[in-house]
Image (cartoon, helix red, strand yellow):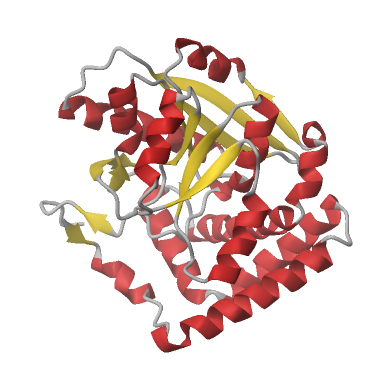
Length: 315
């Protein structure tokens, strides 16, 4: 595996000795913002989020550089002005997501006021076989609403997450995502494999992020105009448990509400060979790309998505 060395231009040099201090500061900021956000309506929080995102756009030079670089090869047909506008809107959207998440418990009380589900019968039909299911999502719109989506669908399941590494900060983040319908399992925890096995055996739904380059077993597939290292777990879990794989892609609508659309992407019988792993991972990725192209300002363009490259790729 090779690396796209251009990303080193945007490398962040954070002192490991100051890690605990940073986490404590982040914890205090989150607690303070949570209390502040609780005083205001959802619409007001969305405005605060837009301003917060605008501030991040103006100050986060390296994140802005990553987004601009990735848009260069993802949307080469756009002018520099159009790409810069996309980056700005991306930051504003992330800011809105952040402030909405601070008051997500309020949204959960009457979710139908804020969230529309499209084609949700796909999920219930997929579970009729009794083998559980894999629910794919991307970081588009507000992905932090997914525990609420589980509650709206009346389904149960698990999601694997990567802890920050600070107990107070991790507990705070878990409190925001906490739901009786979905259990957050720490990545690398000894119990994670057992939790995943139980999820499928109990006909539950495993929530799986498919749009980030992480340290998991992956294959290279085409994503926009470049090879991207993509987790193959969605396919391998489907193969192992004869489980259907469904996409659950969100989008923020012009009125500030959210829409989640569900599509069946694959189901048993599977061939259960490596060629199928690549074929289906490419299929899932193409489906996500289509969704991002429909809402290009709502994806996290500053994630280092293409940092790893195949050895024979000179990009």
